[in-house]
Length: 109
Length: 114
Image 1 (cartoon, rainbow over the protein chains, first blue to last red):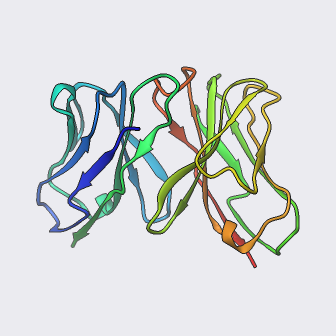
Image 2: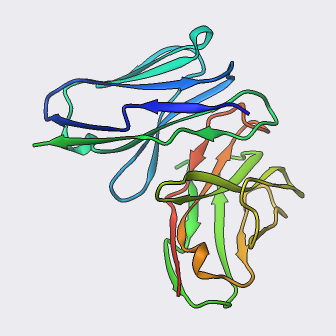
């Protein structure tokens, strides 16, 4: 099945900094999502982005399906951005969604 | 408001006492699934359902049961819970059958089995 790898595993930044999180996948995907798990454990949908680029406020994401990666950009980080960011991917209709191990982001005030 | 709800949010129980975690979605989604999340192991799928009366095992189905009698509900049943089922559980749903749609997650249920 498809493999999903995220980097870096951990990231510590000062408030106001920008960051780029990466998700590599081993095969073509028809489903690629980014989630934020906040310190209370809730999984928040950020982007559904099997291809192309999307933006939502300070966050944006780009998936280059032909090169098998997706990037999540966070600009002007805030302490509320802290948590774990997951990407999840699937190839086909009947496949399971595979989650990466996540990037733990800690924004210092 | 479109959402996936789970109840209870927190539960502490004892070994062997049957329990049910409910999951409901109000988005008319066809696909629903259950995950558990454990430190170092990430999110693992327990069971999923493509539609009413259709359920299939995920990666870690042992010790769990599910049913899908109605489109909106997908309860997770632990017939005889054991301490190794202590975990954070998530229900998820998607409009399209299968995995080709955006997944929406419930708020999570933190279960402790003593």
